[in-house]
Image 1: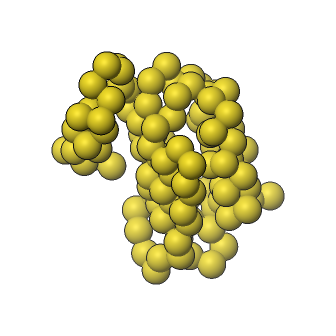
Image 2: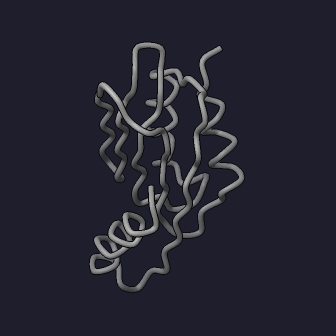
Amino acid sequence: LNEKTQKKLFSIFAHHHEHMEFETFEVKIESELFDRTKILQFLNSLEEKKYGNVLRAKGIVAHRAGYVLINYVPGQVDIQDISEGIPSVIFLGSQLNEEMLRKEFFSCLRE
């Protein structure tokens, strides 16, 4: 996601959580194919806060049948098939462990 989109996402959450400091980072995806089930499990694991306080994750990943749009907010995970897209995922939250998030995210690759 571009910088303008990141700033827009930040502003949406900033007015709801003014007392928190936010950070964002983007995971660039080349041509990797992800396992849809593993992505769903990963997104659900964000509730455990072992990667920090993830308030939003959004993006597009490729899988064997095309692409999926992923959306996460605490308490809600949504994955939708889409016909095309530019793979990339952005995470927004506080006290994010970027290295651990990246590692776990890429553990969702198809074998």
